[in-house]
Length: 137
Image 1 (tube, rainbow, N blue to C red):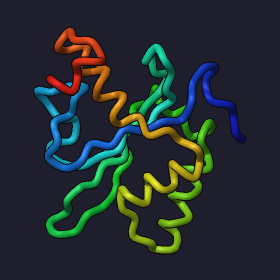
Image 2 (image 1 turned 90 degrees about the vertical axis):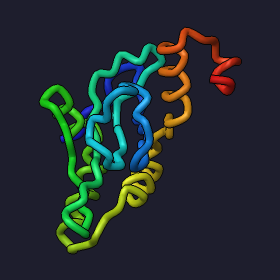
Image 3 (image 1 turned 60 degrees about the vertical axis):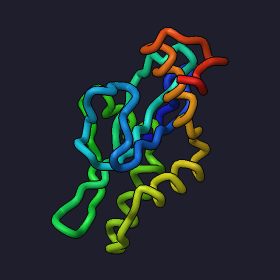
């Protein structure tokens, strides 16, 4: 059963590549040095009804994707079932998936890439600067 996204939100994602500083928490990375994609129900107020990460884990020479999701995000299973169905279909076919594949799936579902905007807003919050000066930070 599919349910609508929370009112006033849209499906969005932010990419954090391996080794990049995570701007939301600059002194720590939620998944060590691993690359990940944060997927969320996003809105202008940045009060997120839910969010979860797809993490690229290093398994000693091989990589695998892992979903890192707290229980407050479980409603995403019914609000974006096509994403989870696509994950399951690829796994059933023993198809190796990369974070690039996840991004393509998200784009096909109309998700908005908010990587730059999210980083800029967090830098502004942290540094107390205006948007027109962020490039100089």
